[in-house]
Amino acid sequence: MIKSLLICNYALLKNVSINFTNGFTVVSGETGAGKSIMLDALSLLLGKRVERFSENENIPKSIIEGVFTIDNSKKQFFTDNDLDFETETVVRREINQKGKSRAFINDTPVLLQVLTAFGKQILEIYAQHQSVLFKDKDAQFKLIDQLAKSKKELANYQQELKFYSTLKMELSVIKKSGSLSASELEFLQFQYDELDGANLTLNEIVELEQQITLLDNVDGIALAIAESKHHFNNEQGVLSSLSLVQRRLLEFDSFNDLSERVGVLIIESNDITAELSDINNKLEADPEQLLKLNNRLDLLNSLFQKHRKQFIEELIDCKNEIEGKINISGSFELQLAAKQKEITEQFDVLKITSTILNEKRVKVLLKLKSQIQQHLQNLGMPYAQFKVVLTSTDTYHQFGNTEISFLFSANKGSALQEVDKVASGGELSRLMLAIKYIAAQSSKIDTLVFDEIDTGVSGEIASLMGDMMLEISKKNQLIAISHLPQIASKANTHLKVVKTVNDLNTTSDVVALNKQERIKEIAKLLSGKKLTKAAFDNAVELLSQ
Image 1: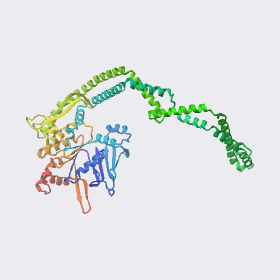
Image 2: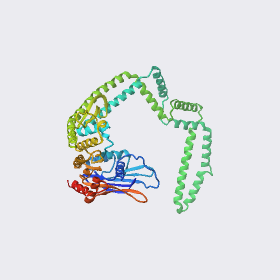
Image 3: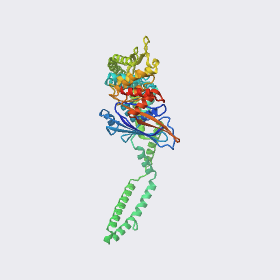
Image 4: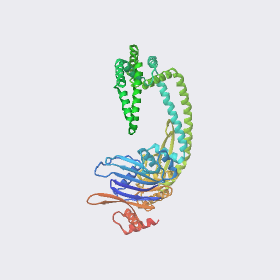
């Protein structure tokens, strides 16, 4: 559940701290006071992308921070994302003046997709005007699988579907590779023979260039060696001079360290002259070898140019790839038949897992229909009908081989049709509340947020909706933005968004109301700006129910 929310410098909310409690919390406030801004800040905190952010270098960065109480059922998420698990988890999002944001979970920076995944496990926001559930088929499947407890069956099906799709992709590759003409196959064979005959070895270019440089400069190298050895070994050379210096230093104990260092130089100089002698002994002008090395280098450069490569490793990979194409082409018919057999067998497995999944779903549909229709009757819709229809198809998608439809009729004698095509705003509100009431019984979401889900209802129906929200809040923390006094009176906690206007700016705050303040606020919701004694009496009565 969400324990607290801090909002700094986000639109009208400059420095707002909100504490939430278990159970049912209602949020009210005049139109334009900032209720939607508060909700938008909460959405941003849990992964919503930054949109329509006003760039202004004079405004400090926005900071939104929430503290969430987490139970052990969410621990795997923290393990999977290498995050510290805390029962009180702190989530923070910072948005700079240019609209760029950073996110943190327990002070560890996280990517936006990780933040979004966290949010989906913790909190769900429903706004009546969005009606996502009644338009998004994926959301409908997810709801049915939640109610049917068919998560395991769905996972098994999706695993088999993934394997089936992989086999079909492999078949496509085989067909593409095996469709080579005789001339194409002949050309590939020529390329392979040429690369294979080149006997390619790693690091060969570097070694060739070193040997060619050596053979190209035999005379100059020999002269350089001779002059170097002369400077090291003549009577006035380096070795003679270093020996003289060492003898003089050895005459005095205070120079022991320096004499040792000169000794090291003498040893190193002797090694250098020995290595020069070794190189000189190996020097030999060999025009034939030089020609051979240059021809080898020309061959490699020619292969680089032909295949548009830069390194020996790339040529070796190219050779292996060509060899693979040739081998596939040679055994095309056998591979094609084997892969098609695999696909046929996997399709049979796929059908079985989809059937098991659909059977698990169908078992819950009749009960769901009965429950929703009963709740709708309790909410003042005695003739309402609701039905979920699963229709088998030949197409296999991530949720099975069925199409799903949520059908609804509000009036007696009316035919069932797709919900989003026939339901009014008030009907959608009651239908969604009934669905959320049922889903809450099996939901793993800790917190539900209803943004004016009560649109289009009033009076006794609003009171009944308030009773259902209160019942939902016994299992899930429930936060509802509402203008209806009948619903506000049912809440355990009442928050109000208040807007303040002065000569310099406009700001909003969120305050928790005590009992007397609640009575006044509910009276306002009942009568508008002009408060009457009857409104106060009615407010007191609503709160006492």
